[in-house]
Image (cartoon, rainbow, N blue to C red; front, side, top):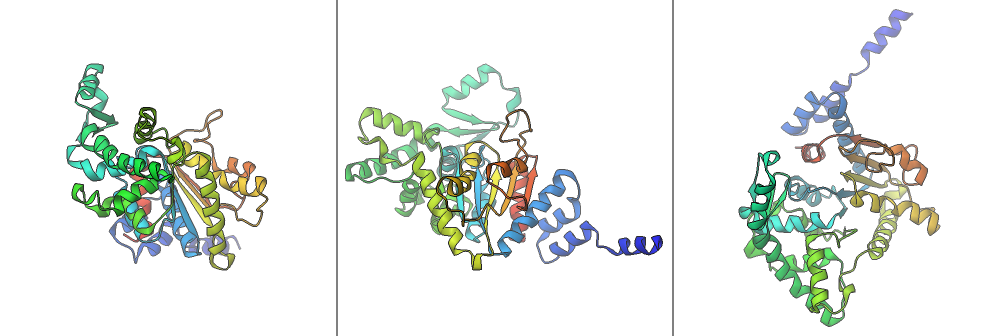
Length: 353
């Protein structure tokens, strides 16, 4: 009897065989992942990618959050195609990620990479400042070619809206620049590699909690102080972003196929970009009484933040159950690694590359 059990067990497909079969109709990147990513964080990456794909196939939608410096890391190379192929349906990001995608679009040729950035002295850093080169790890963003160039263009939109008594979200002002053709002659990368251009084409909502904590946010504040913009609320921020997200979540949940699908949450890094939007579900349930709205139906976080006392970014997903954000049966994945390595591979699997 024991021998029969062992024989039956041997007949069960091995995980690597299942993954190889799933990758058979995909491209070389997915085949590579299926063959080599078998254990530890590598296996978690593949599990999360399969879960993302299954979530969409079940009729679900996906919200992606961006923290860190993903735009300066040029995540748009893969994220833009995810958006174009309807694999992403809303974005929540920091103000830095919103603006830095556009900065890279118009000033890429003036960026400088510092591969030995760990060896820089305080004097070296001061020399970069003197050249108006703002360092993000190994990459320097040129102030004049990127930040000031976009400031001049978007300031005209801020003033125009202010004088007309109109108010818009931060991403809507950048959509105005894109749709008005004001950036076309400035492109220094293939526009297909800009995730914000792809989002604009799809008219995706881009929720930006804490937009004030960004370069353009600081610039906006300075123009309010100077009096160029009279109404500080011309750019909509704060609580209005949460009400916008609540409306999107409620509306999207109603459109899901026969109530079978749900809305997924794919979180890159931690911070406000992740913490802010995941709270929309308990708010809808507990504060608005909309108990018919489904919980998040998929959760994945890519982060190298470790679990420690009071750490939210490093908390295991199950902690979110106690706050009414995720359910006991919600597929949950956490990949403790560098998002610049992990996210493009997950996107490649979902895209079949």
